[in-house]
Length: 457
Ligand code: SF4
Ligand code: SF4
Image 1 (cartoon, rainbow, N blue to C red):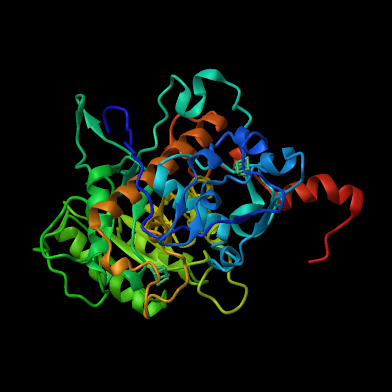
Image 2 (cartoon, protein in one colour):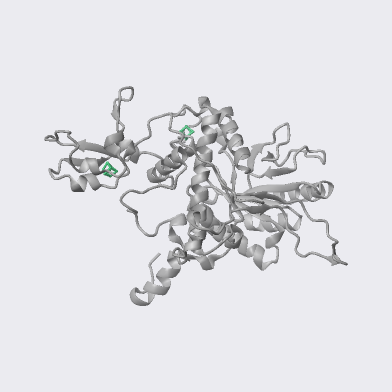
């Protein structure tokens, strides 16, 4: 990819009143003269506030960044902030209210999120939260992320790479396999329940074209260079298939199903050397074996997908996506197959840092799904089959495309910040690079175990 990649963002306000975290309460005795702590709000909340008669609310609640300066500095102690019960009901234990409202803000502004009074949470937790990225190069000025002078490349290649090249008299003898480049390590895919809404599909497609990204879509009639066409595994796809990028999407990694599909793909890839053929496999305990088998049969792209909360589809001890991806990556490395395939992973990718962490665990790129809906004001209420509270079926596709563009613009900036702080100039160098990350369990074992003994699991 030539030239610097840049995403133009522009403010795109929400259609519905966002659910604010805090309600602003003023006790009696306030004269409302604004000659006090409220005048000093650096986010101009009290200057920009409006009373919205249609919603019967004061917009100050949603403009507030929760820095608590006004509460602390009010001399009469009459300003109070209280948690909004509607906010606490958003999403679930994985898609927390903080994550959802942060995605809304990024989609509205295109900017890196501001967390007001700083990070309030614990320093370790489940899933991606027990993994920290190395920020030891954060002080190096030329690598100062989005503000630095060095270009930080976030592009990845999608397709099979040759193990070695053969030359004779300076001429390359090998036929190179087809490869496409994506300027971000992110591919787009709508969750199944939202695929029936045509405006939502159009918004995602439009954003993908604008940003030169790839989007998974149920095999459309006409080919599109930005579409990774998805087929059911039993579809009889012949060599005259109009798409150059297509995948077969499995619902199980059952060995017999894998074996049959792999044999068909082997024949098809010989007849379509110009095509990039992929397989999507659900993450379950048998997936690693299925991945190795598909790679041996010449598959170019493997997409593994977890459930919406990033967990394996398994009843007993489902692993989190990062652990499952790491195991697959290591199996590919140990058997000398790693560069034979592009490994993509999706399910539970809710923040820009999740993309970087997944790549550090061994994926080439991440698939963004539920977060696309959050950009469109989705409340992750999981009632898509009934009535959508934010009427996604009737939204304007151009509005949706701008919101998705803004969210990806904010994620691009954050990825650059993370890479800059790690001292990396391109995201391809991060793949499987766990020397650049720390796991809480390892630190606990190394630092605390000698003092406090073993943890009781
Ligand atoms: S808490 Fe901070 S951002 Fe919110 S209104 Fe008060 S000073 Fe402004
Ligand atoms: S708000 Fe609820 S119903 Fe609407 S798309 Fe999101 S999860 Fe589905």
